[in-house]
Image 1 (spheres, rainbow, N blue to C red):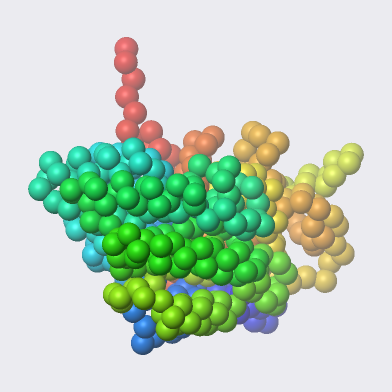
Image 2 (cartoon, protein in one colour):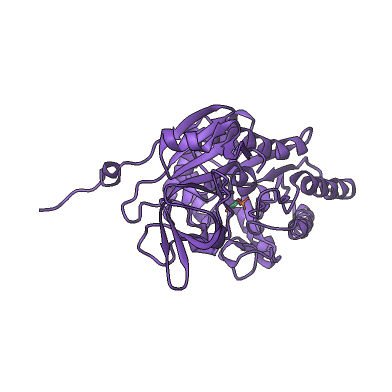
Length: 425
Ligand SMILES: *Cc1c(COP(=O)(O)O)cnc(C)c1O
């Protein structure tokens, strides 16, 4: 994470000390680097330069309006999974015409909202969803642009909770049913079949499964051509993994190299196939854009030695960062101030009343109460998965730009948490 480095023994985000951020905004606080965010987006955008391609940032990874605005200004589209996310795109000044709508359970209201704003495409995942969308579009006098999320049945070799492209997953139309599903879609008068998509999983450590999925999609496009169903875009999804390891570890997949291999295959196919219309290539990256653009800054409340383990109790918890509790995810943890004190092995845990409330286990740390720590690689699936469990206000979020620091979401106060509630007596 090059934009998070030690200067004179103190961890900085760009040119801003994390000690200063803790003093100004308190803890726990999510700290994002603007430069890191834009560089990660540019690694996709640059690899797509001169091509008919669109990078639709999967905003469920981090949907802060400031993040969306920064990306929208650089031409990003957005991959959304709810009506709420569409309203965020619009609030941030993003273009609904570059929005694709994924997800297995779109409601009629969400479909109406998205049709009303003229989104680029609905990524449809089942036949009942096709019928619902056809009906909603018909009632509005519109034609809905549709892509089918095909499940290519390739093993992404990732954690079972984030593998999505196997036959046993709830996502997508089974590859063997795809042709029939396209035929059904083509018959529906208020749908316009425009593309094909897949998303095989997240935190992929290798691009081979993505290229295998690409081959299956390309094959299907050719088969559909023969049926007179001409597709205009090909969406390979997101899923590129990031390094969660110790600082300095290389990314498991270099985005530039992956896109190079992908476009090479597409060019080869275009040179051989009879597919007669241009085809736009769409990407849906989330984690690889924001994951290593952010850290979670937290303060040590207590050191609690135990008979079997030593606990380092911090003020961030599973409600702020679910990944360890949900996926047993390993995330790097570093002191804000380097020290020469002897280290001890700790489980770093939060104040929540659950044994699953841990952030890091069995880590060598030299810590005392009052010290600041950061959970590394926390920019993706951190704040967006945060909850108010235990009536804990969600963390503040700041974006660092050089030596400037912008508060982009204030810390929730307790009164915010019950403002929507009422008593009945
Ligand atoms: C979550 C998701 C993504 C983004 O995945 P990352 O691993 O964060 O890149 C892309 N597409 C769909 C449909 C998703 O659900």
